[in-house]
Length: 76
Ligand SMILES: [Zn+2]
Image (cartoon, rainbow, N blue to C red; front, side, top):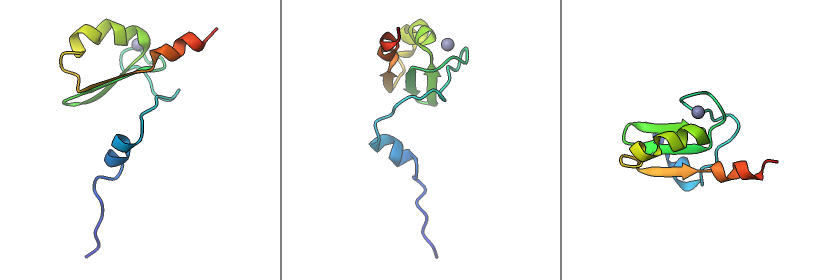
């Protein structure tokens, strides 16, 4: 019987520092996501605006809070 690794990808995600790209979109408005929140049921992506808006509520249940919104400051 051939053995397959079922955790492909999930393991990768843990080992690779996560970086948000232009393809990641805010779950609330569809703008480019700069904040990634891992909660018990999965992960949520937010733009800087909605990340701040939901931060107070979500930070209580978030397993991890990945914020790249500081990259916005690099823009002119
Ligand atoms: Zn948004």
